[in-house]
Length: 227
Ligand code: DX5
Ligand code: ZN
Image 1 (cartoon, rainbow, N blue to C red):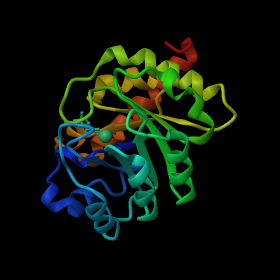
Image 2 (tube, rainbow, N blue to C red):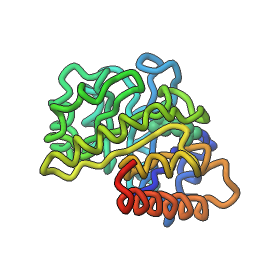
Image 3 (cartoon, rainbow, N blue to C red):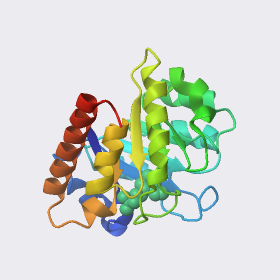
């Protein structure tokens, strides 16, 4: 069970300092790259991530909400990100993007928007390390969790379990104390949370509590048969 805090709703003018607030507690730092084309919002791109990675030592989990990941995704891996996730909806050659990310030394993740069925990425399982099931429409932090995405989380987990490879299931959007339990019970194992972590008084305590809640929910689901 891993927690990946998103800096989207943190103080972006002090990005490195904000990232270091979760150092020692978080497993990853989630960096939301948005291009104002694939999503309506605009955040930061490769030059900012490259600079940031020179200032932090927590593994970076880059979530690319951009057009043409075929061109851009490998650069984030080359810059030293530990994980690079692209959207299947945006990729021209989704298999090749995953292969290029891996070849550049990062874990490859593939993301699906709420309207995209898991069947669309079924063929990619052998070449990816993570499936990101979006639990809000990508673009903004602080939105409400879409509980109707839980069946997709289960489906992604079944798909991952049916393969020989170890594929993580990540959820992103509206993750907080309640939704993290539901997602963990459904089979997610990497949890992105932005406002619920950066908006809390004690970031490390929140992260620790989230991880514990996820573990407990998973244990309960395993004992009682997965919900
Ligand atoms: C939304 C981003 C998320 C966002 C999550 O498009 O991908 O990572 O920061 O923020 P919260 O946890 O506030 O929903
Ligand atoms: Zn994200």
